[in-house]
Length: 287
Image: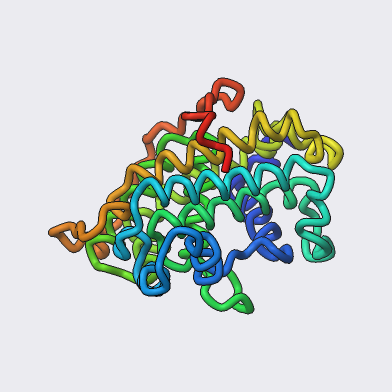
């Protein structure tokens, strides 16, 4: 009976962790500042300005440069999450967490940092906007899908691809609010959040991540964190790199933002064991 009660609303469990992590200092990435800093070694000032105004691909930044920047960001965030300075890297803010375990929020905070960096270099619009703003539903939805991709929830990949298509189709500079909160993507977000909530309830994300964050000390364990955070980041990188937003000048032909909601109660939420994830191109991870 207690277990049944615990699993009544698993999606809310993940949402609680996500919101707590997003409030930690240092978690939110300023898109413009990140792109400027990441591209300054490779691009002209005009290219950087256009990359910020539109996207790196639209600015003509070579895909190899985009990949190098992504790999450098992954290396940096992996080093932070595996190093002894992990907690110092996102200091304070634990009072905001409430009932969410501090180590879980810290780890998810690092997942959100790399998810934002990868999204921005691969052509996504600003996810948070003003740093003082509360996280809105659309941002919460896309971050849920990003984490789902990282952890290996297969249906999350389709959700991210659909959102990317909507942004490319409409040359949008913001997330498709309606699709993520009431539209066709919303049922997918709910299902992914539910899966992640159940996983955390049982084993703190199940399999690999459970081994990485049962206690704060394990977050600081270089070997364990390297074995989970790195492949999860590479998985998201690989997926984002395959989407239409990385292709300069590509625009879809149909406006699909206002597609009516179609509830599907049956899509499988399959999660590949994190222990089986092998990062693609390990040699490219180094900066």
